[in-house]
Amino acid sequence: MVVGRILYGLGSGTITVVQETILGSWFKGKGLAITIAIQITTSRIASFLSMGTAIPVAKRFGFYGAAFWANFIVCALSFGINLVYMVAMKHIHREASPEMLARLRSKHKFNPRLVLFFFGIYWLIIVESFTVGAGWTSFLHINSELVKLRFGANDAVAAWSASVSQIMPIFIVPFLGWFFDFFGLRTDMLVVSTATFTFSMALLGFTKANPLIGLVIFSISLALGPLSEITAISLILPTSSLGTGLGIYKSAMNIGSTIVDIVVGVLQDRGSRFVEDTEHSYDYVMAFFVVWGGLSTLVACSVFLVDKLKWNGLLRSNAGRRKEAYHAVKTKIGRPMLYASAPNWRDYVAFWNYIPLATLAAMLLISWVLFGMKLA
Image (cartoon, rainbow, N blue to C red):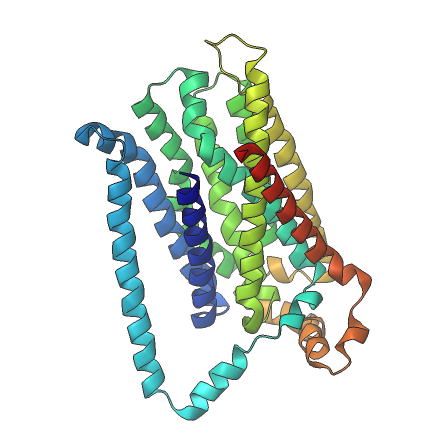
């Protein structure tokens, strides 16, 4: 099972980055937010259906593995679609002129030294991915069991209730892509996302309100946050390094999720020592999520302030004002490309440039150590 989860993580992590990088290559500016919104919406629809139908499918066939076979069929169809896309791209390359191909290659030529010159606001978004992104993922792992144990639901009701946590992105995200193009306010939505996450954790953990209310509020956070972060990254990074930037973003989320998952498991085990077997043991877990959400809200507020004070509100700008905001920081945005390609590029690297990469590597090491300790 552990090997299967590792393979699942390798596939699900890379495919998301590849999809978003492809969209970033085909679409820019006004169309990018809408296309990524459609991609996220499709993903949430699939998650909603899979969470809600897993128990009924297993009961229908009398075998828990039936749900895995259903997922296998969907993955096989996805693999076939990827093959069709690859064939289509090869055909396009054959039809394209040599000049166009040369221009595309130069546009997407990546210099690994660029990572050392990524902007501070980008690394703040990565910290936000590590905090609230890990909170989203980890809560999605336990929400069904939370509803079952804390609110006394049976397996089928708990599964359908938990699937509600995926429902709001289906309706909000498509309009959110349009909203970003016409009104901007990405950093504002990021703050709202972290605040709604924190509020939903408090509601689910420390009140007797219907769990559907807290799960719907959580799903609003899940709708607002990812699109805000991804489109913000696409605005401040050049196309040639967008794939790397999104890869680091996804890696930070997965590293945070691994650490938070283990912390949540430890807190749940520790909480169960102080309650009767018939009671739930999620008090410590939900208190942790509330604190974690408060931390992510502080990071989101930092992104908001840095964008406003240092980036002329580029991330808050709509499609109409984006050119003006971009022009004001054009020199700053082009600086990393100049530094990375300069023969004396080492002269431009300061000590703080290494800190984000070193911190990310340390968190990765910690996640693997914790994983190994729990596995042993």
